Length: 114
Length: 115
Image 1 (cartoon, rainbow over the protein chains, first blue to last red):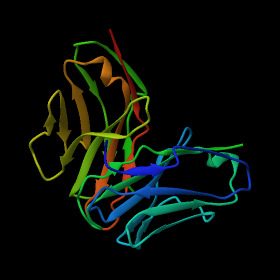
Image 2: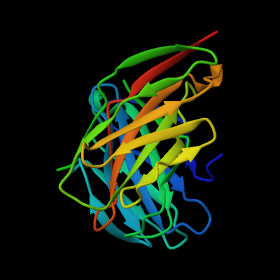
Image 3: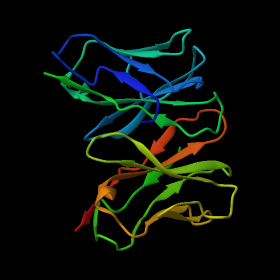
């Protein structure tokens, strides 16, 4: 158990809908990262937050957004969902913003868009 | 941009044998970190081992060790005394030290340990 929690474990929804994925980092970790793992794109970095502030952006679509709250949990919002958004979404956490700490991954949320 | 290449999509090994997974990367940075993550059928991403680029000594964690060749930009993972529980996808990952700390992953190697 990495100490990172993600909810829900599975999510099935229809095209055009909006969903919210939730992540709680390990106790004491200030940085949260979101990754998408799809069959054709592999593991891709989406976005990083550090202590409530956006720190880095990767291949995140404009239909996707995220935030980190004062209690350090983070939410990833996916809207106007398309079939191609079906993937496993991971959250990872580490100690600091520019930190060299290892990232520990949550169990992931499997999103299926029908 | 940093890229990570794993040239072996699938590998298999007999239980108790040794296997080596390959990884190469491309970067202009001098200081960085490299990781191997394991993803078993449960899909959980589990850290296997980490290597700091400034360290010449290869990292080891029990049955897992790496061969880090900085000049060649090569970072292979050796699994000794393979166990059935080692069956998983293995991902090599690169992380910059400064600024963006997102990890860049290779495409993965699917390892099957046969009884």
